[in-house]
View 1: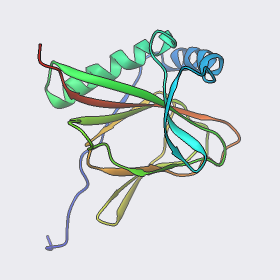
View 2 (view 1 turned 90 degrees about the horizontal axis):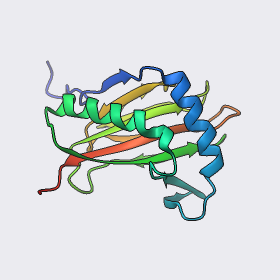
View 3 (view 1 turned 90 degrees about the vertical axis):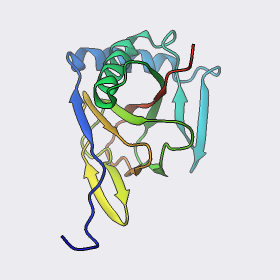
Length: 175
């Protein structure tokens, strides 16, 4: 092994049972609520808010996804008590997501779930020390990774919206 050899941090992938039905329900409700003015939007980049915060009370169809994400995060981290935050990322044709990490606070793990991932809707690209690893999104797929791992999403070249749910997991608040 040479002195310049290295490896990317581990990626953990999982699938959601009944994803097709759950995703259909999420997409139907999302179309009805996505324009509500009271929803919080952050990260305005290139004319698009990259993050849309939709509470479970407004989008109850997301509950099986959130529950499964928390189960997988507990298994990966070996932690029973975790704090979870999530938001949605709707990428219309031509849009992309800028390079970033999730190590701003006390995150322990990051995750993404694909509710809609049309062909050519953009790979998830991980970058470390100039090396790229590409992951092709698939509906019903979870991907979990370290918060320090830089990543971006290529432009959506499909003719349809791509919808993903992003997660940050951190230590549970002290009681």
